[in-house]
Image (cartoon, rainbow, N blue to C red):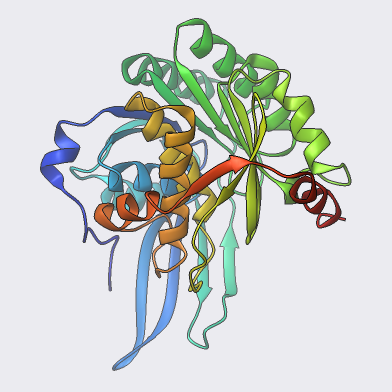
Length: 323
């Protein structure tokens, strides 16, 4: 049985690094069965968007402050997987259990065998999670708001409140959300919003991003699966990254978000922070582990990322390709 590995990490760098707070309302345990040399290999990971963002933050040499609830037997396993030198847990004790997913990849395709959703937080757990996230955000100066895994476990308005309170306290808020949590966070005020064109529904994705840009301080990053992502900021720009063979696309968007947050924590320019995030996402797709990679590979890849003003043809393709 294998747990979350640590190859490619520089522990000394992490210990002295910048911090990034990560709001993760519903970490899940993922159990994956894969083919091995002597039969089946079983891998256990801390999953869910917040866990993946935190992992990539640590890969990039920053120290994630993971703000999340843990409860039940699954929560105990998650805590054991996450406890280590690469991240700092700001956990909330929960009465209900965290969620779990069991997947089979022995034939090369992902087949979900079983899934149990995480429990909805009660009022006291909700308040405690809010408080630890606010405290971690102030300490770090940069905070990432991530969404739930499956069903909502917190009230949607927590995203608006966190975004508003953190922003008013001078914290740079990066949001990677969809649906009602996205709208709530934007209403509160965020510095950077990352959103996939798959999450805009029937709307024109470019027009939707431009609408959100009116409420977002720095930029909206519109990802488009394998197509070049767009940055809607003071101008509309396209992100050009080298084309790499994809082993597993999952975790690429979370890696991008983590890279942007780490770049802002390092006081990089917006475009340099996005280059770092785009490189992290590109390297992630070449690996088995979600939101994983080697720092040297990511930094080298960042030098290959080009950001230039988007042409009218690129913008039109972003609109028509979504339909």
